[in-house]
Structure formats: structure tokens, C-alpha cells
Image 1 (cartoon, rainbow, N blue to C red):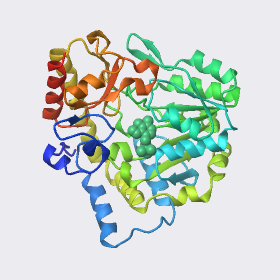
Image 2: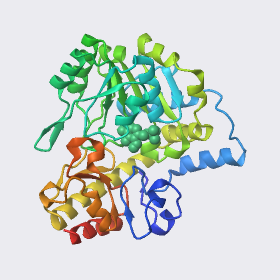
Image 3: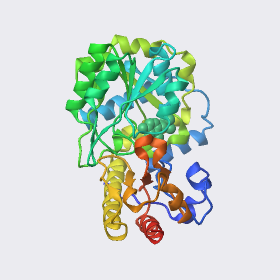
Image 4: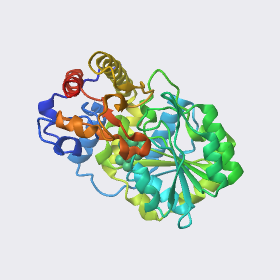
Length: 380
Ligand SMILES: Cc1ncc(COP(=O)(O)O)c(C=O)c1O
């Protein structure tokens, strides 16, 4: 397995992405979902080879990505996909909007489960729909899908369900049983499930990820999976994401999209994704180990330095959902955190359930994480 370590702050501050330009250099940026690790060498070589050849034109065919993803899905999740039923476009947000556009009539309801990735609140109206909130059930920090609430929303006419699995910001990996139950409900009420699985490649050893389309015939009939290598391999700027259908019904939606949707895939993104998904397993395994180590360190630091802060160790990805309510830092504790020179995501952006919470990105070096928690502790 490859050992993966974060770049130094000196190197990171030379990056020009949002994470590194939004705040002055005295702020530790632990907000936007990018990792501080260097690119996987196989990915970096694939992209630089294309640059050296000036091979920066239009994508010829999505097939290399489709086949690479089908191979990855089979190896990691025993999930069989027909590469002919995979389509690509720029990013997962566009996959979501374009899928919902095919399914919705103006104003149709789309169920989401806050606390959830904030852009879900914007992508639904962008696609012409109306957000229907069915919050996760929070049983003293043990979160799960509210199947009764979801059924009530479907019965009331919602036409689609935008599922987040694993769920950002909780790193919650939904159980196979709950996904199968969602699929049954989707079949009963003729709802389309768009399953955002972008964080699935970063599932920790504490959980097993189940692809929605693998759970049942009902899921295959009613689901569209949307995903990419971009969270796991830090490729957000390279613009290549994947939509998977496993039924004529869902494939019909993908094929009803404008041909332009596919043309927008980036050729550099395509080559990076193919390299990541075909030759990146060792690097990915090393990254998950680094994240699990960082998660453990975060738990220790919180317990020793900020014992009032609630923390449920995530089972996937590099995001921690921190409950500051006992500290009395108000609805948006990220304001006080920024005063302490640590940039976190405001909890309320994830829905009203996020009042008093923040999201922290722990895909960083141990010394950065340690310093960030010390700064927060000093601000109590
Ligand atoms: C759940 C989820 N979906 C989608 C995205 C955005 O993906 P993209 O940059 O491919 O649009 C993110 C980014 O963090 C995310 O967490």
C-alpha cells in the first residue's frame, strides 16, 4: 500500500483553488471538500502525458471512463454495470440537475434529507423542482433515513428523491436494508431516485458501502447513480463525472439528455478518471488509511481540548460534523472559529438541523489538525 501524506502548508498555499485563496494565510482552511494530499502519481502522469501531447481537445467517447468505472465497481463492491449504460458529463452537480430535469415537471417535489450537502437546496430549483425536506432521524447522534417521512413525502406527490450516500456532512453510509426499503417505496409511488455516491470511494474500514443500483430490481428500475473520482482523487477541477442506469426506464432519461451534456466532459478529466479508477487502488487504500488516522486524531484532540463538542466518527470521507451547541457558540459556530483563524463550514448551510454545528475537513496534515483544534480550544 502507498503511504499518503499531506503537502506542506508552503506548497499548499501555492495552490489557487478556493480552499487556498478564500482566506488570508494566517487562517487554517478546513472547509471546502478538497484534500491536502498530492495527486496520485498515476493520475498526475496521465494528465501531464496528455498536456505534453497538447491533447486537450474534445472527448471522443465516454467509453474509457465507463469501462474503468465498471471495473472499479466490480472490484470494490461486486457491482456489475453494463458500460453501455454509463454516460459522462462535467461534474456530479450537473449529473444531478440534468437527471432531475428529465424526470420533473415544473414545481415537482424532490425529497432531500438534511443535514445535507448545501448545493442540494439549489440544484433542485435549478432543475425546476421544489425541495421537500425529510430530515435524517437523529437518535442521539445515531443518524438514519426517516423511511416513514420519505413515504409520506412520496405519497404527497414528490416525484424524485435526491439521495446522498454516503451522506455529506455526516459520512453516514446508508445500510443495504434502508436502501432496499427506499427502492420499494420508489416503486410503489413511481418516484425516481437520483443517488449521489460521490463519497463512496472513500468508505472507511468501519463500514460497507452498498451502491443503490445493486440492492434490488426496484432500485435498478427507479434509480440513477451519479458519481465521480473527484472527491477520492481530488479531481474537482478536471470535470468528469459519471451517470449510471440499469434499466430501460433510467437509460431513457439519460438518453433524453441533450448530446451537449456528454460533450461537456473534459478530456483531461476523462484521462485522470481512467487512470484513477484503473490504476489508483493502492493510492486510494493509502488515502483511506491516512483519513482514518486523521479521524482518530481528531477524536482524541476533541476529547482532550474541546470536550464539549459533539463528534460522531464518520464511516466515510473526510468530513466531520461537529456539534458546538453545548459550548454556546450560537447558530453558526464557524463565525467564532474564523475569529480564531480556522475556516470551517457553517452548519446552518446544511439545513436548519445544522444550527449550532460546523463541518470540518480533516484531509490535512496531523500538525495542521492539531493546531486548528488548539486554536478553537483557545477561543472557548
Ligand atoms: C455529496 C456531494 N455531491 C456533489 C458534490 C460536488 O461534486 P462536483 O464537484 O462533481 O459537482 C459534492 C462536493 O463536495 C458533494 O459532497
